[in-house]
Length: 192
Image (cartoon, rainbow, N blue to C red; front, top):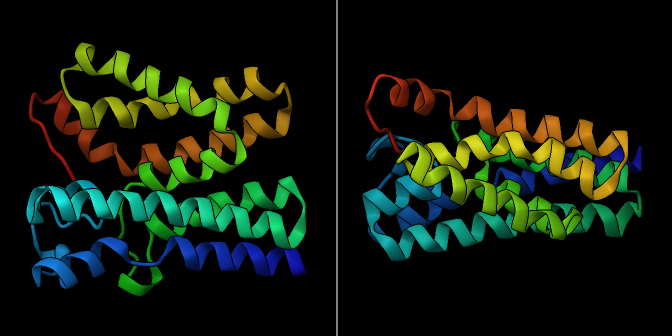
């Protein structure tokens, strides 16, 4: 029961509406009504400028890391920490405070992985950087790099639960990037 409560806490930490609050505080805008309407760091960057965008991304990374860290501290169970990480990304992507509008989970997912498997970060980012010149679109490349998470986790940890966790994390990120993939396929670039 205690573990379930901490996973719920992780969801609410992930749902902390950083992009919305940064937009309001620094530029007096509702990010949901600007640019693509996506409640994430990239849309803040495009609609409000580099400083608010970078602040948003850093805060999104922090909330993913904080959510997992707190679950680990309170439960000491890696399995609950994995569930907490997924809950944090789900909270970011489907934000209960913003009528379930949210971001795409990249930065929050990065924060989750920083705590749970820091050695994997380098490989995921490297894969994204390799894809960038191939696809000629940074956003699509980084979203697509999510497919590398399950095999990277497998090679790093050699355990089935890590593969399952990686698949679930990749799914949460990829599902939010589907509009980007469709636009890319049609020859348009879309950054949300």
